[in-house]
Amino acid sequence: MSLITKEQFLSLAEPATQVVTIKGVGDVRIKVMDGFARDALQKALQDLGTSDSVYFSAVIIATVIDENGEPLFTPEELAVLRAKNAAFIQKVGLECVRVNALGDAQTKDAEKNSDAIQSNSSGTA
Image (cartoon, rainbow, N blue to C red; front, side, top):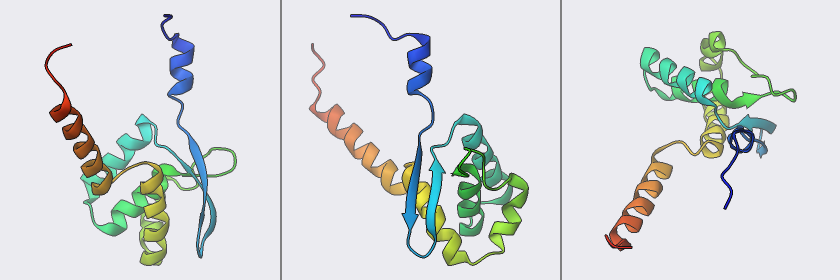
């Protein structure tokens, strides 16, 4: 058995991107958050709260990218997104949440899977 190399590890850990078609919006390129984007999202939520307008706008800023892989919006544009149609921002934000496996449903699924694994495990090898 050979151990993974540093280059293989870093290659496997590269954030994936996905182009999703959102009805009424079009094609949107969404990136799985890296550590920096996740930190920025958490900071925005700590500083501004977790209302839907803050949450979905911040998730969009952290994950929606252009064809060159650059963020479509900057953190300074959070208020711009919050001032737009809330249902539209939520629709896009929900896709970002889905691609990044964020939210209560994913957490509950992970906890159920973890509990199932633990309860079926024996303490012996």
